[in-house]
Image (spheres, one colour):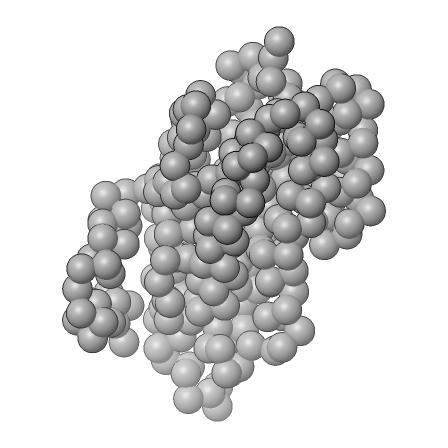
Length: 267
């Protein structure tokens, strides 16, 4: 029997690549979007779901269960970028980012756990970010939201072990997707004390995305985790130096690591 997979944010970027790859491998895949009517010609169906709207989550899960009778894998991929000096980002935008990147996955997880317990098994993959392992300048809110999801997964893994429900994180580095287009950018204000360093950092971040890795790397990583009997808590996918930066943070003194980051971002 083919495993049934739900991918939030499956209409573009990493989510779309993962969905297409798993479909080609014989999985039954459902993706989601807030505007599914714009994505009717894809390789797998796109259902309406907003991770900030619990009713749409419940309805999507019900639709899948009514059709398939089970749900084996959930990929919490929907997310939003945000940049800016923390002092200058409106509180409403900070909360909106956490609603999508942190509380959204929680809403999805809560909605699928009863079915996974009923079927005595399941796998939940949370797509986080290498940025969640460190506080990055002018990406502090994004780093914090993804870092919070990393820690949440660690707690969930222990709470769910008695139900044969597995959970893991996959943290991507920079990939060539359209994430920059949907990212909230705090405006570059002429009178801002952060104007020059923030502007330089923003240009560097966009260059990283434009020159990022092929999203199919993430698709292959997701398949590998699905086929792993007991997945680890954390996986990192990306260029060597991006993954190695996590190792450096672990072994270097805080001030040394901070200087490396500042040099990288030309601060």
